[in-house]
Image 1: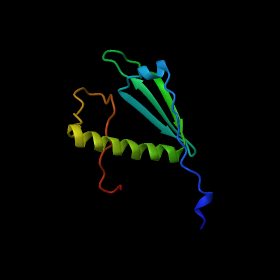
Image 2: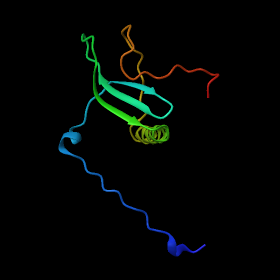
Image 3: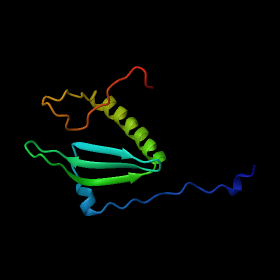
Image 4: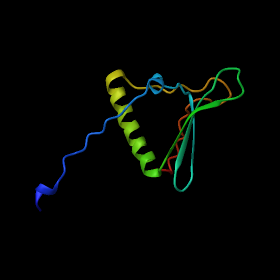
Length: 109
């Protein structure tokens, strides 16, 4: 095969606006899906406030959601290698606020 038809990899320039650079703090994510998309709502739960407001909603397709999962896993592994294992503390209150890990089930891969 002739390599002269190959194009060099394209560089992507990403613009980060001033407002977006501030970021949004979230301590609770609600994830739902349909056959064609994943929806992730990033919310903030505050003590004594019975309502949580959605501060950002990300809608993506299943392939991008899975690629995001792998990228996040890879970055957590790099973080833990550099700074130590991230401990997940059990919730002290009766509620399950925050990002809670899934319940382990030995039957599910």
